[in-house]
Image (cartoon, rainbow, N blue to C red; front, top):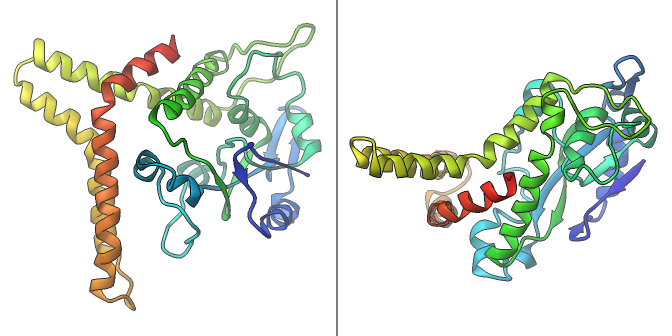
Length: 286
């Protein structure tokens, strides 16, 4: 097995043997199908949870607002993934553990040199990645908006370079037959990433049309605002009613109010930066 990390990723104590133990479990053993040329049962890759370092959250106000929740708290934070819960297959984001033999067999002749930036998503699709939610790694978060934009611009570029795989015509290494076509679930993951990068351009276009051509401009402006703020509203309402029986109301509110303020602050910042986000998303797509 090989554990792979980014340069800013921290591997907490006892995480390595937990990763190895989960990978070696009989139910997780990767079974490679030589006909379909992919892992069809078990997992060739296991992807743990990834949270933000406490030190990075303290580096700036931007990191504190946009860095999410830090620390280890598996009992009060429910961890879920739509793909893992529904299809028993998660997404690989470059930090985890993989079975070398299954990995090499599944990815043979799949990637041409220097043509794939978002290779981790494809690796997880061919070698079958699973989410290991009870093991957590920590990574850094950009302290400045400009650094975060640069990182997201690179991610979006990589996602849109996978259009060939989405439509069943991936680039192939010279002198090879190339890799097998992706399964429909893998194509859904690619399409989901592309959809995410089109959200802000679509909202800006919607409000611009509402202010210029469409009737009832207040309606279209309100729709754009609600799209940005509804997730924070739902998360706040869910946090308000999710009180443990052994927790006093005052203690519950002391934890709920700062979390709600942070969620709405994050949404307000996202709304204020939406036009700029649409601009650099379109630039990365181009």
